[in-house]
Image (tube, rainbow, N blue to C red; front, top):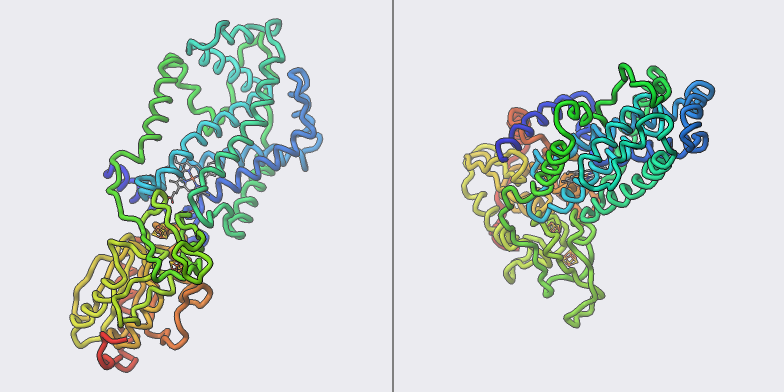
Length: 515
Ligand code: HEM
Ligand code: SF4
Ligand code: SF4
């Protein structure tokens, strides 16, 4: 499984690097696949509602109403029909890519299983919506789907009467099934919306809207495609005639050609096994347990910044339990906490400047205590040689390994957003280094979803706790590069060192250990 993940990661990395080049990191569609899923869902829903105004839901008139939509009102309803179809296809593409990408990034194991196992059934519902949609056109493709699906369902010992009997010829055909399909095609999407909402319940600030330029660009692409290649019906269904050659939608109907070679029962078994395997993925193999964040009530003032910044909705603010004069205190839901440390970076009490007593912030990760990070920073400062001394605080996932060199010392942590900005101030005001680098994942690609955004906002003074103005920005670099961009990272570090040689040496100040 690990080798498969690595393979997908290499493939995604290549594709993402190309899209970075074409669109820039912020608008790279690969970083917005889930949000694009929502976006296409809304296009499908909106165009569907419009089509429903003109669509005749009776089996005898459905085809004619779609012909009216496509040819008589091609400029609006016709375009809506095409948008409806192409956005549905795009939904399949982004959801499959989204699944593979989350798998390649290993964002499914341990406490992150929830989004995965709620995502899996959405595939099933997307297919039910799509297949029932093709059925409603009641053309020859719909006839093929109706008969093939009925025979396929009959392979399961569920129905007392074979449902394929409904489609033997035009005299046996009743409107019953058609009405059922209309019902399914309208209500399953509503259920899917509910599932999509559940899917992101463990995500705070879930990104359900792609950035505007990306949304406008993709919508325009669909529109142009709709105008150039409008969706049309095939010849009307006629159960007395076997359909000839059919235009096929491989996105939704990919399973059907297999029915020619594999018995329907076996195909059900393959599909069920596939879904079971997908559902079990988060435990193949199980993740090593990580110790969740802990709150120290003695130091928590209930300010709520950790609550605002936790990407996994793992923190709640609850009424004060220790009688202190604050309204609230932070409480960690250990089932949701993935030990990313973003809450530590947000806590105003997590500062290296205090030293009278041991540093214990309001919230911290037991495996990465803030006091330890302060000690490591001080120790790193003693290992530098003469050159421009660069202290790097790096995220474990960004591809920057621990380096112990004369001019570069790298300290790693689960996410660079775990570092409270006061550490940058501390390192530079104490002269621990000539320059500080914060190395994280590419924009929009943080392993813990929001680390790159929070770090940028804290450094730019847009989010508490922000970096104090007194910090010389010329001595600070924030790198957000893909894990595989080793050469670019090296080049940027070298450029930074070169820039630091133009600045006076940041001499160590007094006793670096004191506050
Ligand atoms: C209708 C289909 C789907 C939509 C609209 C959708 C949408 C989303 C969105 C908006 C996010 C949050 C992105 C963020 O804010 O960082 C997300 C996360 C995620 N989705 Fe989906 N998703 C869908 C289907 C799936 C499927 C089929 C799977 C896999 C089986 C899946 C697995 C995940 C995972 C693993 C995460 C990230 C969890 C984490 O960061 O811990 N999703 N999805
Ligand atoms: S950020 Fe720190 S002080 Fe504020 S509520 Fe969270 S733990 Fe308490
Ligand atoms: S470490 Fe903190 S920010 Fe990260 S999931 Fe746990 S509580 Fe949330």
